[in-house]
Length: 235
Image (tube, rainbow, N blue to C red; front, side, top):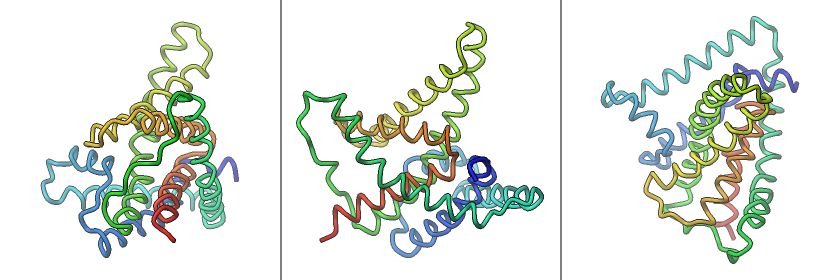
């Protein structure tokens, strides 16, 4: 299971139900809701005009089909592995907030404890946005940016005769910083403690990506966000 669940094809296929849920919920509950990372991808696909979102959906679907074919040819028990990935991601989701909070507190002892950002929009929009954040932010910042940083940093590390783990550490930290700063580039006011919290969460998600793969990362991120909004807005 630990080998199969780290396989990129398995990760993409395992995320398919969550992606379909996101598409349906956004269509029914919050049509205007778009995650910042998703908007970034749509902007890059802007040459397709108003069909950019269809191109993005088609590309994701084609990747998933290719992943399914790869799994079928290798006789991977995809249904069992995908189910356990979802469960594993849910467990990590419940741990992500407390661990990131402890790391944040250790890094910012001089700050008083503060509540998370004020709510913006309805609970339905928050839930839809939470799922989108898990899918697209992990796609852009962990699977994309972190992998690219590892690719570059490994070559630098070899040139300087540094151990390979330094490249991984560099990629995890830098991708976490970019991940955190991206939220402020999208227009959110800068607040130091929130920036540090997201950076710590990004480091944890980067380590999770390194150890467990994209699928587990997406479920962890998405379900943590949903749990946060539901528990905050609930009774």
